[in-house]
Figure 1 (cartoon, rainbow, N blue to C red):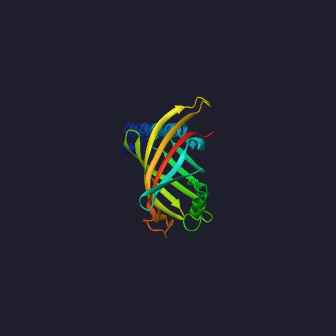
Figure 2 (cartoon, rainbow, N blue to C red):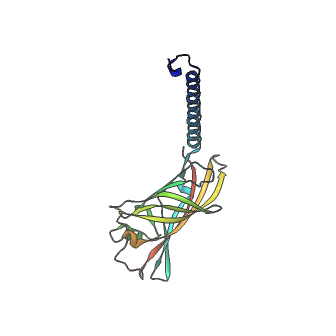
Figure 3 (tube, rainbow, N blue to C red):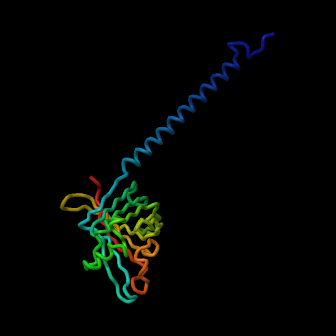
Length: 220
């Protein structure tokens, strides 16, 4: 006697084959939909992702530090660049990179600036740049964020946490370019980077207050 499954035109076998084919077609269709969704998502993110660069004429990377525990010396770096990359309109995913030329330090005193560039402090000949690269950004409230990243200075890299405020966006009427403005603040310890290690905090403060305002526009 011949079993049912050995017959080529067996109803049950044909039915099972039909069901299997339908299932395979559905799987392929679902895979195509998923693949298409991934492509659309990647295209959307890539299309919106934008790099912004600082306008040096309207930006400032400043700092302040105490002197003899009762007075304050302020300064800034005249040459620096900021790059910000984001794929979201509110900049909640912003990635920031900063490079400052140590030799451009300015405290309105040429003799002091030369001293700061020397071996006692920054040693700008051996370590010519200050670099910051963000690792993450956390929204605190409204336009206030915590900016986490790594700061490299004087040959030492340390993790730092800074305060970031997204001031807003507008269009420059002169060149019709869109601009975005950020303010950054925080406190760094020079001892963490081995800067001015032979000077005690009673003479030159250990804590350095960072105060920056950056105007950015889309990279051309």
